[in-house]
Structures are given as C-alpha cells and as structure tokens.
Image (cartoon, rainbow, N blue to C red):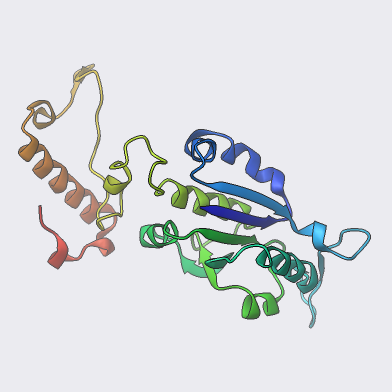
Length: 230
C-alpha cells in the first residue's frame, strides 16, 4: 500500500511514523508513506497557502490553487483509490472504515488547517471525508496519523501475529475482553481461574461473555442481538 499525505506541517508525522508498528510496516515494505508540503505547490513567492474568507468572518481559509495543483500533480503519477479530507464534519471513523480502507492500494490524505479548505476542493477533488471524533483539532495532521495507524495494522504481514487484529475491539461489534499476563497472583490480585485452566472451549466462552458484558456497560449502541453467538 502507498499512503500520500498532503500537509503544511510534515514534521508532525516524523515521531509517530518512525516508531513501533508503523515503522516496522515501512521497513518490511508493506506500506510506503510519502509526506508532501502543500507550500511547494504555491505560486506565491512567500509560499502563502491561506487567505481571508469571502464574506468576512474570523479565521483564514486554505486557498484552492496550491491544494488543487498539489492534488493534480500527484494524481498524474498515481491512480488513487480514495482522496480523503480529514475533517470534523466527515463520516466518523470506525473499525469497518479501517477494514475497508486497508484493502486499497493507494490513498491520498489531505490535512486541513485554519478554518478549513476552500469548498471547491471538497466539491470537485475529494472522494471521501473522514472525522476521528466530534471535536475540533488544530489541524488534520493528528487525524491523519490516527487513520494511517488504524489502516496499516490491518495489512497482512504487518502484525507479528496476524490473528491479533481480528480479535481487536469493534471487529465483531464487541469490545475486547480483559487480558492478563504474569504473574498469576500479584499482591493478592489474581488472574481468573478459567484462563489458567487450559480448557480452550471454556476460555473462548469466558472471553465472549466478558466482551459482551463490557460492551453492554460501555458501548451498548454496538450490540446487535441477532449477531451475538459464541
């Protein structure tokens, strides 16, 4: 997979993308991530990318010309499956979106800033808009990092145990069950006996019941009774 990211602040990605799973995915050749500074496509000698909004009001707007020139330049080299704008009013990112996007080969992510991007970009060049939550960030970079991480970990070969992603929260509309590790008894706080029993059938049953209980308590809107079975 290739993920190209358009941003005004490419340095914001260096830390998150140079560690842990995302770094290993790049090192193994499972994903190529390219960062492009939108300022490189402006015709203004001061590299200006924002201007006042028509009609007045507070805040600046990312100008149409440099963003479109950037998108068109990259599209001339790559056939993108999706051109995604990270926006607070986009469709809310969930696990099903991540699963779907992980099947693509080429993604282009646009990070907004200020009061957003010129609406003509959204109308004519963006194929999808995604939000990571009902709140406003200073820019789309953090949202792009979250989306990229959520997608990359689902690519076959990225995780050492490929079944790990299948048992994540939300994959089956349930939250993950509690997990424990050594020691089995820490200051009197004990691991449930069933996890030490070696009885795989009972362990599966316990995990499902705990997942269901946790989901009922914390995310009841996820439950679809017709789909719940051990």
